Length: 184
Image 1 (spheres, rainbow, N blue to C red):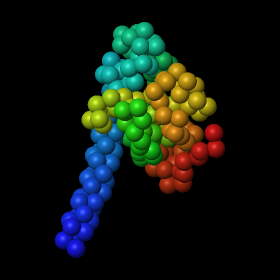
Image 2: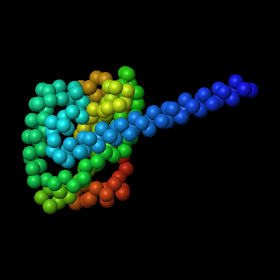
Image 3: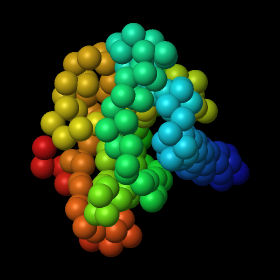
Image 4: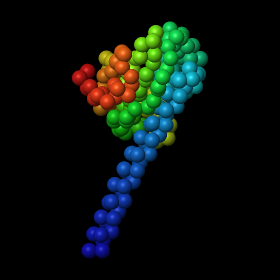
């Protein structure tokens, strides 16, 4: 009887550790996405690049070329005002090929030509250091499978919902009715 009790205590301890690890991983994901949001708000594209998946940066020709690419892309939104940029929910967290991988939302509200535009976007996150730090890939609707073909080490079990954009709607209003749409 004493051994049975000891066995159940050990089992409960393992379950608690697994829950704690999951909580810590999700906190680290949100911390990483919060840094992405902060660098986006500051328009610090060099720092923003540091949070992107290294294969994506490499595909664009390295840190400097990726930063220049971002500067050019974002210059078209020169007159846009970023009202809010924040990490969203961690929708999926899995272990695959010795990496932690996730699907995490990001929230954005901008004002463009006096019109509010709000969005919920899906991102793939990958950790190469046991979940301490994370690198991200922003997904566009319809490119999830293309990303999995390019990034060979992404789990086939990662499934992201479609991004949602609403024109003329504030982010807090969008989030009141938002439900992830996996119909892709």
